[in-house]
Length: 451
Figure 1: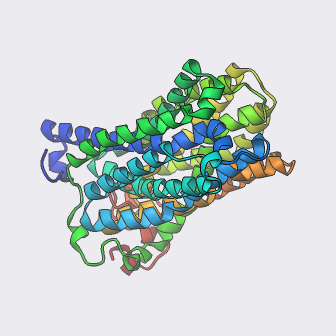
Figure 2: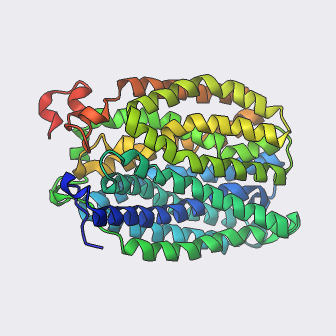
């Protein structure tokens, strides 16, 4: 593969160029899958390792403490979004993605070999926290860079379809973690999983990261001349696009919160609220994630036809109406088939957003701050609202007001709807396919539109 993949329209009809672009998508998305598998192993196996690090208290309090550390990992994401966004905008997307997968490998391996509370006392949860912080920085950098890379390497007119594979692999990471959980539950007893079985998925993740590193080293670079400019990847340059940054913050807040509510938290919700068996809940969520992953390209391709703005309006509008009734119904249901249908319905609506999550952000920023703008805005909103989803949900449950959480998600989706209304149409004003006048469309003075 060549050192650079051009974005010129004249190359888009060339068969060899198309093959190179597809292989670039495959290479970058495979690393993305490994990163998210490692990150989500923590969420899916928390039911088993929580007593090893937090032996005191009931199940809810133990999960609350592990959810707190899960949230801290998210709070490191803005650092990763800034650090790796700057690296990607100045040194290249490939360099940034290689470093991020190396960090994820280190964090996963560290969790796999950590001593327990029984062995080293309070040092155990502290070490767990440090490992999650490393993983948080890694994932914070991964999202923005991979979203930027996939958006730039995709063919014009099909960017939504190709870029949707970022969430295919993101969900695939969750699915893989869930499949490992279901497999281990089938071959090991609950006592064995609590004793040592929970370490196995983290070792698997560390080994998979080595394969991802090899694939990413062979990726072609997409960064254009903007990366050589002195202001590339700086806050000073990003501030010129602060209106777009705020729009992305707003609709990512609702997107992240609803996504984590219906995916990572849902397993615990089915067990802890609906009183479903752990294995049944795990199997149900595995099937849900399989369907959810498979439909992402459909919604990405749909956005290529109806536009990203239409996708975002449908997502946030329908999402605002659905959360309270769906969560209320799930909380009183023990039938796995009904649970599967209700959760899948919710995720179909969320797919209007997740299918285009990366591309809809990338189109709002120019090349020289694209990775920083996408990564940092996503990381801030994701850390504040997505990363705290489980903790907030469990806190409301512990306080005896679980339904308040449903309304909290609804309010954030309403904010996302407002942001979707304000968002410029990327087909006309975006930096990838439009005229690059995003800031002007948002009400800025024309001189900032081409800064």
